[in-house]
Length: 566
Image (cartoon, rainbow, N blue to C red; front, side, top):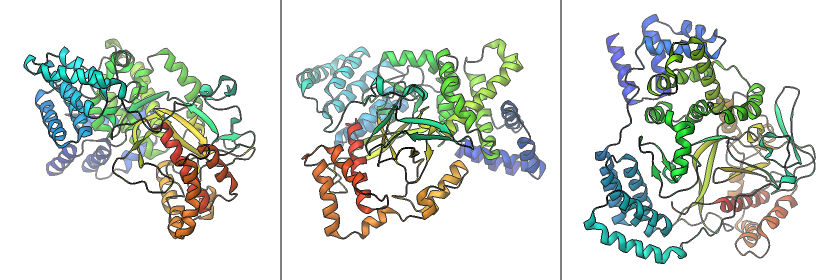
């Protein structure tokens, strides 16, 4: 027993996240009872969410698995200096984007004002090299305000003078447009948040499954929805480039003064975040991020439990999200156990290490049970419905893949959000709706002509352009517990990307020349020309249509592109 405990303790230290804990907990149960069937059956017999959370929490306490899971997130000058040194090395090599990130990490970790001042000054130099002069001037001001050494100020003031001169010459993205809007008269007031056009309606089928349908013929490229997220979190590789409150791009963010986990684009966002939710998550965010591991959607659920204290959020939830939760409610034992385990540790973090629980409520079993029930509900909704928020960024030094591409871009995830109207769409591996983001705003457009009464679909991940039938169905079954029966899965349509490789060079040039003419040469209106090309081909499973659709997607990605730093 002691040897086995030592092994599992080592697993906890090396894999301190929810996925490891699910295995570790079952190992402990097996060590004590010699089997885990009874443990599983007792859990599956529970009928309420608070009972499930309590059951998992009691077992975590029983095996002392909560001990050491929490640590206090403290500023640390030694760690900050390491990031500053890495930033200095990157700057010396001319890798200014990497230097920018390390200086921001230094600012987040620094305890002393002097070290923050040095990091702000060095970051201003990186910003200057990246032609971000307004941000450079802001950081110079912050450096001076953080006791920047007087002996070093002449060079800082000289940089301020140069940045001021260059301020009007800041380079802007070559391709970019403002976030689209739906005119008030064009909005459908009968759908969540009124974020879609009037030609769209939502209904339930005979099995109470939601469906989004078009009321009349809709051409390719039609803007059908513009929606902001109801709740979101920053996550991903570019977390240092986005404000953790509004998710707007910010290359010179300021940190939380208490924790080392978040940055903001300004004082207003920092104050709004603190009063709405960050005053609670601040003390637990660092261990919480480690605990959820790759399942970042759980952070959305945690944020929802804090926002639920706000009357506006509760009203929006009851109006827009509760009906959807009731429609798609599934009792999946595997998910229930995973979510109950997650909720048990999150409950422990919130109850013992934040001020979210009033003192008198800690002795009130009704409050405790209601909190567990709400926490499980929010985690479940976030787990099922959180949508990835992506941005297109130009990759410098890489040649475009296709002739109709002017620059090479790749899409990168920077957050997760819940979008009430988007949640109504069902999946198809041959979707007729494509998703783009302008910042954190989700924009939906049709990718081909849709007939009156036709259902609109999005892709939950797999697409027949790039994935074969087996991989697509395996993904959908693993994530959503059903077998995809969309048109291309039923017909086992081949991967379009493979067919592209079979096209002769002459035909490929002829096809892409039309898209190139639309996009690069700007001879005709880009969108209208590509839409005409897409709609001119009747069949969906055609290499020509595939290439024109890729060109249309590429065009929309560039329109929403706001990133100027890799």
